[in-house]
Image (cartoon, rainbow, N blue to C red; front, top):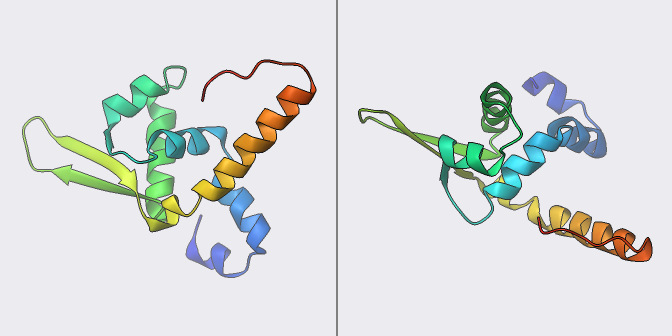
Amino acid sequence: MSESKIKSKCPVELFIDVMGSKWKILILWNLKNRTLRFSGLQKKMHNVNSKTITTHLRELENLKIISRVAYPEVPPRVEYSLTEYGKDLFPIFDAMRIWGLHYLECEGIKAKPC
């Protein structure tokens, strides 16, 4: 998403555009309170191909929601972590989790761990 598009957005529309993919939310959830290398993130998201993860990591990095640190080593080591913008999303994610738990409970469905 370009900066010119961000400047003229309704805040709710912006949030939907930024978080519009379940993969982005799962990437952020897996980075909660930790730094991961690409391989570690990929293991936690075992149903997602590497190209999809890479695409979403780049988008999140461009939006300053995650931080990417590349170390000048052989083989190269790259680590991903949340920025302050990324950390600010967790009250929203926690509210989503609580809503989901309530819904499942009301429907008599057992929740699985996230």
